[in-house]
Figure 1 (cartoon, rainbow, N blue to C red):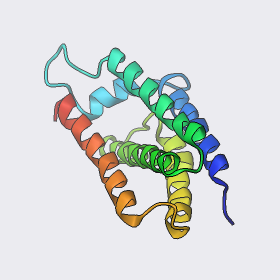
Figure 2: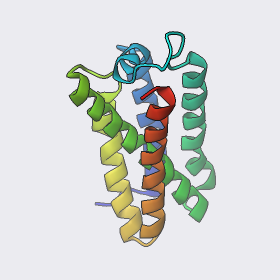
Figure 3: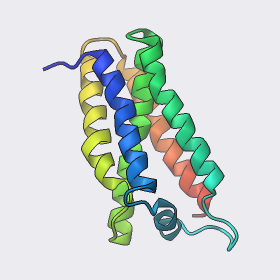
Length: 156
């Protein structure tokens, strides 16, 4: 079974919207959970709401770009890069659940949507030749690096 690129391009923003909703609205509480997982360097530190708004707005903007570019090299590359960052975010949530032994706002949508979308879309794009394995590895490494940077930036 193959999924059209336009369908992949619609599923990605839908997944991100569900994920952000789980993190901040229903049930919410991501900021508090994150502060327990990655204690801030100072008592006045911690993850800033402005940063959360900025990074999630940027992610929402980036995830709609494949709809704009369509099934072009740019559209496919952006889709995979955003999908890789999202999948690594799901892995981050899983790591946090295992470390804290406590539910993470965002882990359910990350596991149900981000990881399968990344795997299915990635396999399809790489096997069809639309995305090179080298690009896939680089974009996945960027997704991992972002989350490592985020943890160090926060305080660990």
